[in-house]
Image (cartoon, rainbow, N blue to C red; front, side, top):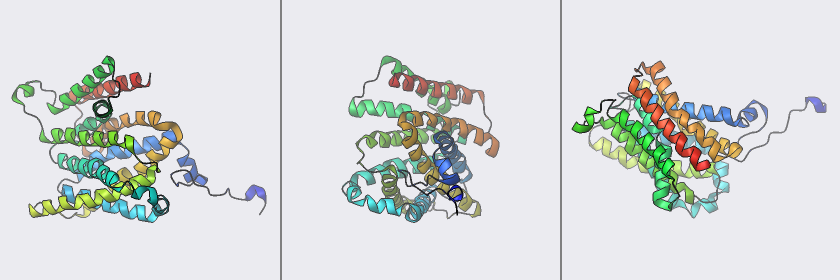
Length: 318
């Protein structure tokens, strides 16, 4: 075989992803990876709604992380073993992060899906960067300007529009949708997890994600027990298994790998901007797949949520 026909050597990037051939091309294209990542995360809101009546929320949460742990055992075990000496010294910290950002967030997310629409879930989820900004200020006194607080106010107002479904009169009666309030709580948990990542150990993102996924599985089991004791446990139906398979493969596993690789290629600042696509994709997919109605107050909420984030992020980078 001559030199021209010899296939390129298979190499691996920092995440352990191959860098040769079509897969290598994919893992070298940060912006395509980021679009696929946010599309997967946007699809999770739709999957949460499709799971209603097909599998109970805590069963879905536990089975989700069971599937992810199995995939990690197949594809990421070498990275985990190589970095285990460092990871072992930070197990309590990583388990706490897994419980907070993965188990807690997902449990509330899937419960919320029982009483609100996917469009609302996606838009409220889009507020996470602003909650992170507030959390960083509270925990580390990270400087926040007056205009950044204006961006925070815009985003929170957008979330409030969703909570009252565009009807200001609901504020006087405190008539909020329980699912929307649960999503706000879920976003606060995930923001806390994100702020805590500032003290992450010096390991690869893939290795750290692997330990947190195991933590998420372990900490979700008591919730399954509580759900079963209350008589609310539901094993997945055929549709439930299909939804679960999507959640495991795309939002939980591939999207995480894609995002880690994107951060390596373009940095966390530029990669983080793409997270703003999640509520947009959630809304589009909810309309196309679930037939949900995109109403005027949804549009207004999107403008305020994304506008507030853009204002806060742009000024923070300035």
